[in-house]
Image 1 (cartoon, rainbow, N blue to C red):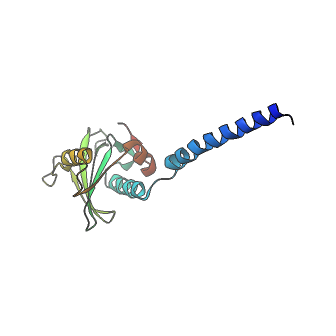
Image 2 (image 1 turned 60 degrees about the vertical axis):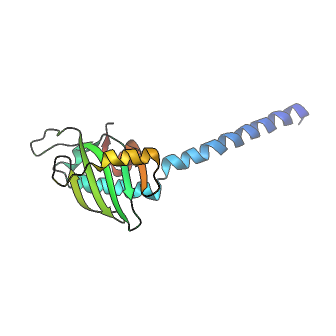
Image 3 (image 1 turned 180 degrees about the vertical axis):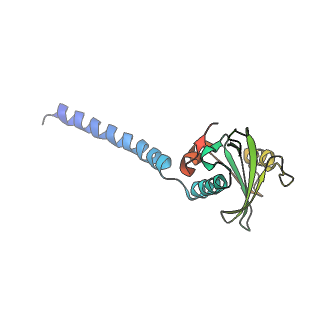
Length: 152
């Protein structure tokens, strides 16, 4: 092997290492969900089961979560789904109250229990207040993990 072939081989190896250095993190971030994403997908999937037509659910926004030290959480997002007559209800907000990742109460927009936390959580997530553990989840990714549709 002459020096030109060695140089070409070294460049090829260096390029391969650089490609792998970028590809491996992208692969794992895309394929393997975090524990928080798994919890979020579980929350969404359980909410879908509560609907008249669970297979019709479409997530139409990102998903926001506020969590406090006690483990209490509020999950907020917009969705669309079919009602009992087979018609889509429109883009509605839902608040899901959970404890340690297990939902125990759902409040849909228009109900007396609905507190419109989504507006507050969007502002908190944007400004990064430290009193609450607020996080925004990609709606499309969570929809895929929860086996529901995405239409944002």
